[in-house]
Image 1 (cartoon, one colour):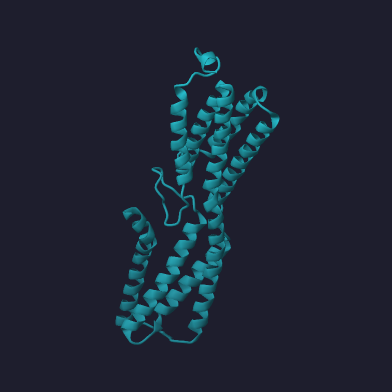
Image 2 (cartoon, one colour; image 1 turned 45 degrees about the vertical axis):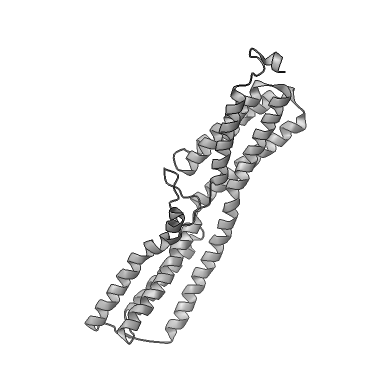
Length: 276
Protein backbone atom coordinates (compact mmCIF):
# COMPACT_ATOMS: atom_id res chain seq x y z
CA UNK A 1 0.00 0.00 0.00
CA UNK A 2 2.73 2.62 0.78
CA UNK A 3 4.31 1.83 -2.59
CA UNK A 4 1.02 2.45 -4.39
CA UNK A 5 0.55 5.76 -2.57
CA UNK A 6 4.06 6.88 -3.52
CA UNK A 7 3.50 5.85 -7.14
CA UNK A 8 0.27 7.88 -7.22
CA UNK A 9 2.06 11.01 -5.98
CA UNK A 10 5.35 10.39 -7.75
CA UNK A 11 4.70 12.85 -10.56
CA UNK A 12 3.66 15.57 -8.11
CA UNK A 13 6.97 15.11 -6.28
CA UNK A 14 8.84 15.47 -9.60
CA UNK A 15 6.88 18.56 -10.61
CA UNK A 16 7.07 20.32 -7.23
CA UNK A 17 10.68 21.64 -7.60
CA UNK A 18 9.80 23.22 -10.96
CA UNK A 19 6.72 24.93 -9.50
CA UNK A 20 8.64 26.20 -6.46
CA UNK A 21 11.39 27.58 -8.71
CA UNK A 22 8.87 29.42 -10.90
CA UNK A 23 7.11 30.84 -7.82
CA UNK A 24 10.41 32.15 -6.41
CA UNK A 25 11.32 33.73 -9.76
CA UNK A 26 7.92 35.44 -9.88
CA UNK A 27 8.39 36.80 -6.35
CA UNK A 28 11.84 38.10 -7.27
CA UNK A 29 10.56 39.82 -10.41
CA UNK A 30 7.73 41.41 -8.39
CA UNK A 31 10.21 42.78 -5.86
CA UNK A 32 12.40 44.17 -8.66
CA UNK A 33 9.36 45.63 -10.45
CA UNK A 34 10.68 44.02 -13.63
CA UNK A 35 7.44 43.02 -15.32
CA UNK A 36 7.43 44.87 -18.65
CA UNK A 37 4.47 43.06 -20.22
CA UNK A 38 0.93 44.27 -19.37
CA UNK A 39 -1.80 41.72 -18.77
CA UNK A 40 -3.64 40.97 -22.01
CA UNK A 41 -6.75 38.93 -22.87
CA UNK A 42 -4.63 37.23 -25.55
CA UNK A 43 -3.15 35.09 -22.80
CA UNK A 44 -6.49 33.26 -22.63
CA UNK A 45 -6.15 32.15 -26.25
CA UNK A 46 -2.50 31.18 -25.78
CA UNK A 47 -3.37 29.10 -22.71
CA UNK A 48 -6.28 27.43 -24.52
CA UNK A 49 -4.06 26.56 -27.51
CA UNK A 50 -1.38 25.06 -25.25
CA UNK A 51 -3.94 23.01 -23.31
CA UNK A 52 -5.48 21.79 -26.58
CA UNK A 53 -2.08 20.66 -27.86
CA UNK A 54 -1.28 18.87 -24.60
CA UNK A 55 -4.72 17.25 -24.65
CA UNK A 56 -4.10 15.97 -28.18
CA UNK A 57 -0.80 14.40 -27.15
CA UNK A 58 -2.31 12.96 -23.97
CA UNK A 59 -5.20 11.35 -25.88
CA UNK A 60 -2.80 9.72 -28.35
CA UNK A 61 -0.42 8.32 -25.75
CA UNK A 62 -3.30 7.19 -23.53
CA UNK A 63 -4.76 5.12 -26.38
CA UNK A 64 -1.38 3.42 -26.89
CA UNK A 65 -1.07 2.88 -23.15
CA UNK A 66 -4.44 1.11 -22.95
CA UNK A 67 -3.32 -1.20 -25.75
CA UNK A 68 0.00 -1.85 -24.00
CA UNK A 69 -1.79 -2.92 -20.81
CA UNK A 70 -3.09 -6.00 -22.63
CA UNK A 71 0.30 -7.18 -23.91
CA UNK A 72 1.66 -8.79 -20.68
CA UNK A 73 -1.71 -10.54 -20.19
CA UNK A 74 -1.75 -11.90 -23.75
CA UNK A 75 1.93 -12.83 -23.50
CA UNK A 76 1.38 -14.84 -20.32
CA UNK A 77 -1.76 -16.44 -21.77
CA UNK A 78 0.06 -17.66 -24.90
CA UNK A 79 2.92 -19.16 -22.91
CA UNK A 80 0.52 -20.75 -20.44
CA UNK A 81 -1.37 -22.29 -23.37
CA UNK A 82 1.83 -23.91 -24.63
CA UNK A 83 2.58 -25.11 -21.09
CA UNK A 84 -0.91 -26.68 -20.85
CA UNK A 85 -0.38 -28.50 -24.14
CA UNK A 86 2.94 -29.83 -22.83
CA UNK A 87 1.24 -31.09 -19.68
CA UNK A 88 -1.49 -32.76 -21.72
CA UNK A 89 1.10 -34.47 -23.90
CA UNK A 90 3.05 -35.64 -20.87
CA UNK A 91 -0.01 -37.08 -19.16
CA UNK A 92 -0.92 -38.88 -22.39
CA UNK A 93 2.51 -40.13 -23.49
CA UNK A 94 4.84 -39.60 -20.49
CA UNK A 95 7.36 -38.21 -23.00
CA UNK A 96 10.56 -36.43 -22.01
CA UNK A 97 10.24 -33.68 -24.70
CA UNK A 98 7.04 -32.47 -23.02
CA UNK A 99 8.79 -31.84 -19.70
CA UNK A 100 11.83 -30.37 -21.46
CA UNK A 101 9.54 -27.96 -23.30
CA UNK A 102 7.91 -26.99 -20.01
CA UNK A 103 11.33 -26.19 -18.56
CA UNK A 104 12.14 -24.19 -21.67
CA UNK A 105 8.98 -22.11 -21.14
CA UNK A 106 10.12 -21.44 -17.57
CA UNK A 107 13.50 -20.23 -18.83
CA UNK A 108 11.80 -18.06 -21.44
CA UNK A 109 9.56 -16.45 -18.80
CA UNK A 110 12.64 -15.63 -16.72
CA UNK A 111 14.34 -14.23 -19.81
CA UNK A 112 11.31 -12.08 -20.59
CA UNK A 113 11.22 -10.63 -17.08
CA UNK A 114 14.96 -9.93 -17.30
CA UNK A 115 14.34 -8.23 -20.63
CA UNK A 116 11.58 -6.05 -19.16
CA UNK A 117 13.95 -5.09 -16.33
CA UNK A 118 16.76 -4.22 -18.75
CA UNK A 119 19.02 -7.09 -17.70
CA UNK A 120 18.78 -9.13 -20.93
CA UNK A 121 19.04 -8.28 -24.61
CA UNK A 122 16.16 -8.62 -27.02
CA UNK A 123 18.14 -11.15 -29.04
CA UNK A 124 18.13 -13.63 -26.14
CA UNK A 125 14.32 -13.42 -25.95
CA UNK A 126 13.95 -14.11 -29.68
CA UNK A 127 16.41 -16.98 -29.34
CA UNK A 128 14.24 -18.45 -26.61
CA UNK A 129 11.12 -18.10 -28.76
CA UNK A 130 12.83 -19.82 -31.69
CA UNK A 131 13.97 -22.53 -29.27
CA UNK A 132 10.43 -23.93 -29.28
CA UNK A 133 11.03 -25.32 -32.77
CA UNK A 134 13.09 -28.31 -31.65
CA UNK A 135 10.43 -29.31 -29.13
CA UNK A 136 7.65 -29.00 -31.68
CA UNK A 137 9.69 -31.20 -34.02
CA UNK A 138 10.03 -33.80 -31.27
CA UNK A 139 6.26 -33.67 -30.70
CA UNK A 140 5.40 -34.62 -34.30
CA UNK A 141 5.57 -38.43 -33.88
CA UNK A 142 3.76 -38.18 -30.54
CA UNK A 143 0.62 -36.26 -31.42
CA UNK A 144 -1.72 -35.04 -34.16
CA UNK A 145 -0.70 -32.33 -36.67
CA UNK A 146 -3.33 -29.84 -35.48
CA UNK A 147 -1.69 -29.99 -32.02
CA UNK A 148 1.56 -28.71 -33.55
CA UNK A 149 -0.35 -26.08 -35.54
CA UNK A 150 -1.87 -24.67 -32.33
CA UNK A 151 1.55 -24.50 -30.71
CA UNK A 152 3.05 -22.73 -33.72
CA UNK A 153 0.23 -20.18 -33.64
CA UNK A 154 0.95 -19.40 -30.00
CA UNK A 155 4.66 -19.15 -30.76
CA UNK A 156 3.91 -16.63 -33.52
CA UNK A 157 1.69 -14.64 -31.17
CA UNK A 158 4.47 -14.49 -28.55
CA UNK A 159 6.98 -13.29 -31.14
CA UNK A 160 4.55 -10.67 -32.45
CA UNK A 161 3.87 -9.31 -28.95
CA UNK A 162 7.58 -9.10 -28.11
CA UNK A 163 8.20 -7.16 -31.31
CA UNK A 164 5.30 -4.85 -30.45
CA UNK A 165 6.63 -4.20 -26.95
CA UNK A 166 10.12 -3.54 -28.31
CA UNK A 167 8.69 -1.04 -30.80
CA UNK A 168 6.77 0.77 -28.05
CA UNK A 169 9.90 0.99 -25.91
CA UNK A 170 12.15 2.25 -28.70
CA UNK A 171 9.86 4.80 -30.35
CA UNK A 172 8.05 7.87 -29.00
CA UNK A 173 4.69 9.34 -29.94
CA UNK A 174 5.09 12.25 -32.38
CA UNK A 175 8.44 13.70 -31.35
CA UNK A 176 7.69 16.99 -33.16
CA UNK A 177 4.48 17.27 -31.13
CA UNK A 178 6.48 16.95 -27.91
CA UNK A 179 8.81 19.73 -29.04
CA UNK A 180 6.06 22.22 -29.84
CA UNK A 181 4.13 21.37 -26.65
CA UNK A 182 7.22 21.92 -24.49
CA UNK A 183 8.11 25.13 -26.33
CA UNK A 184 4.56 26.52 -26.07
CA UNK A 185 4.40 25.69 -22.35
CA UNK A 186 7.79 27.30 -21.74
CA UNK A 187 6.87 30.49 -23.62
CA UNK A 188 3.56 30.71 -21.77
CA UNK A 189 5.22 30.39 -18.36
CA UNK A 190 7.94 32.91 -19.27
CA UNK A 191 5.29 35.30 -20.54
CA UNK A 192 3.34 35.02 -17.27
CA UNK A 193 6.52 35.60 -15.27
CA UNK A 194 7.13 38.87 -17.16
CA UNK A 195 3.51 39.98 -17.01
CA UNK A 196 2.33 42.47 -14.40
CA UNK A 197 -0.48 40.86 -12.41
CA UNK A 198 -1.95 42.46 -9.31
CA UNK A 199 -1.98 41.75 -6.45
CA UNK A 200 1.37 39.98 -6.07
CA UNK A 201 -0.07 37.02 -4.13
CA UNK A 202 -2.58 36.35 -6.90
CA UNK A 203 0.19 36.55 -9.49
CA UNK A 204 2.32 33.95 -7.70
CA UNK A 205 -0.69 31.69 -7.17
CA UNK A 206 -1.90 31.81 -10.78
CA UNK A 207 1.54 31.36 -12.30
CA UNK A 208 2.30 28.45 -9.95
CA UNK A 209 -0.99 26.68 -10.71
CA UNK A 210 -0.64 27.06 -14.47
CA UNK A 211 2.99 25.91 -14.34
CA UNK A 212 2.02 22.90 -12.25
CA UNK A 213 -0.71 21.81 -14.66
CA UNK A 214 1.42 22.23 -17.79
CA UNK A 215 4.53 20.50 -16.42
CA UNK A 216 2.49 17.71 -14.80
CA UNK A 217 0.74 16.87 -18.07
CA UNK A 218 4.02 16.90 -19.99
CA UNK A 219 5.61 14.51 -17.47
CA UNK A 220 2.52 12.31 -17.55
CA UNK A 221 2.60 12.10 -21.35
CA UNK A 222 6.26 11.05 -21.28
CA UNK A 223 5.50 8.37 -18.69
CA UNK A 224 2.57 7.03 -20.69
CA UNK A 225 4.69 7.01 -23.84
CA UNK A 226 6.93 4.27 -22.37
CA UNK A 227 4.71 1.99 -20.26
CA UNK A 228 7.43 -0.67 -19.96
CA UNK A 229 10.02 1.34 -18.04
CA UNK A 230 11.47 -0.65 -15.13
CA UNK A 231 14.77 -0.50 -13.27
CA UNK A 232 17.22 -3.40 -12.90
CA UNK A 233 15.54 -4.51 -9.67
CA UNK A 234 12.13 -4.82 -11.31
CA UNK A 235 10.68 -1.66 -9.77
CA UNK A 236 8.59 0.70 -11.88
CA UNK A 237 10.75 3.62 -12.99
CA UNK A 238 7.81 5.90 -13.80
CA UNK A 239 4.39 6.68 -12.43
CA UNK A 240 2.43 4.97 -15.23
CA UNK A 241 3.89 1.56 -16.01
CA UNK A 242 1.87 -1.49 -17.02
CA UNK A 243 1.67 -4.40 -14.58
CA UNK A 244 3.84 -7.47 -15.19
CA UNK A 245 1.97 -9.52 -12.58
CA UNK A 246 0.51 -11.95 -15.18
CA UNK A 247 4.03 -12.90 -16.30
CA UNK A 248 5.30 -13.09 -12.69
CA UNK A 249 2.33 -15.25 -11.73
CA UNK A 250 3.08 -17.58 -14.64
CA UNK A 251 6.69 -17.87 -13.45
CA UNK A 252 5.52 -19.05 -10.02
CA UNK A 253 2.96 -21.41 -11.54
CA UNK A 254 5.57 -23.03 -13.79
CA UNK A 255 7.91 -23.51 -10.84
CA UNK A 256 5.16 -25.40 -9.03
CA UNK A 257 4.29 -27.55 -12.04
CA UNK A 258 7.90 -28.43 -12.78
CA UNK A 259 8.51 -29.22 -9.11
CA UNK A 260 5.55 -31.61 -9.17
CA UNK A 261 6.58 -33.34 -12.40
CA UNK A 262 10.24 -33.61 -11.45
CA UNK A 263 9.42 -36.48 -9.08
CA UNK A 264 7.57 -38.41 -11.79
CA UNK A 265 9.35 -40.84 -14.17
CA UNK A 266 9.38 -39.99 -17.85
CA UNK A 267 9.77 -42.06 -21.01
CA UNK A 268 13.24 -43.53 -21.24
CA UNK A 269 13.92 -43.47 -17.48
CA UNK A 270 13.69 -46.34 -14.98
CA UNK A 271 10.15 -46.78 -13.73
CA UNK A 272 8.50 -45.16 -16.76
CA UNK A 273 6.89 -48.35 -17.96
CA UNK A 274 5.30 -49.02 -14.56
CA UNK A 275 3.94 -45.46 -14.44
CA UNK A 276 2.58 -45.71 -17.98
